[in-house]
Image (cartoon, rainbow, N blue to C red):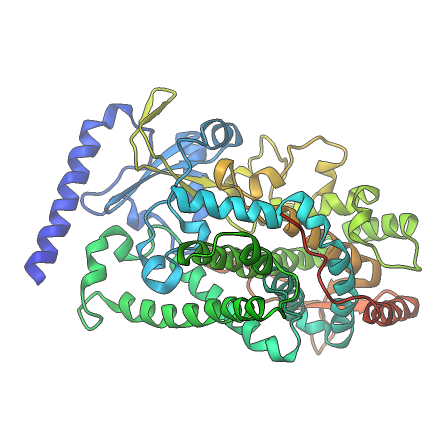
Length: 510
């Protein structure tokens, strides 16, 4: 067994070396690789997107990085990303082989699917349920949920991350499955959170040895170097239970005529009734459910940190809300065009700390760019964080400056933060809608300031990110207090009004 593995690794290494020599005069520049291990030891274990941007500043817009068994071309500028991933999206529309994600239960996850009929069918379904026309039908429900979120913030302000997560999960659960997110559905929400933790751990390309050497998925879990197998087995159990439970419950309700309106309900009623189509529907619903609450929570957490660090930005936004909305009602989804500075804050949040820092695109055919040869199967990694911190486009890129989108004509950050071409995030409209109204409502009713310790000293919140596919800030503390007694009254009055509104989703029609 050891001889077999050694021989396979040696073969992969030799082929990699021969291929590199063959195309060495036609590939982008990059840091000098070491024999056998490439650039693996030069990549930091955390915040690697910063290193890739540094290499971009040194070597150019397109940088070659080698990891055993894989060669990545990193894109660090908007122009190159637009030319390759947008204008040539028909070529760069696939994903790298995600073996670890596959054996952990995420084989058919839309973000990791390689290009093919299943991906096209999945995205077609999501366009029906998450496109602009469909999202407009969700506006009343999103507005209805805001007061409950604010009431939770009023009760336990220190648990703001939990409130972000729960609010996003309730909305995602309702859209995907028609569930209300009340007590009996807490298990589903908890399961979705656990499943996303698995996904975040297994989906990053180039991290797991089995992604580099796929044959290792066949070795037993007790074998040396196969700890990933035990992790994958646990992850698959968590994922299968979390994602199967809500789907098959909705299917049962559809069959007996008791299902509430939801994406899954409409798809089961209007699409073909065969196992493959039902599995595509299940995974499309999974994308809506799990894809919304984690990313939304991360973005709103960074927003909260920014408001504490940049009080002048918060005061300017609150003045806009008071002037336009007044203090007798909460901001709603439809107020977006009337609150340009709040919208700029949202854009700057996605730029300052994008939810996804890097996005892989794999070529499905040979290509050439600026004289560089890009073989079929090569993965181009869009360094989204690097592009959105390009000083040529965004001065003082490490600072939080919403004015760059109001007065200075900076390029829109959202067209980068949500991906490119045929792999752009299908949930971008609902994500932007939900994030905007949550930010506006918090600014209307709360002050977010730096916390103080027991001695009265100010606690400086740390601007530091966790590791993982989703760009979460590490835990930090801030002080969140009502702006006034009138704000408290407004929240409570709005909660009572929301209780009188229908809790059924006005679902889109196909």
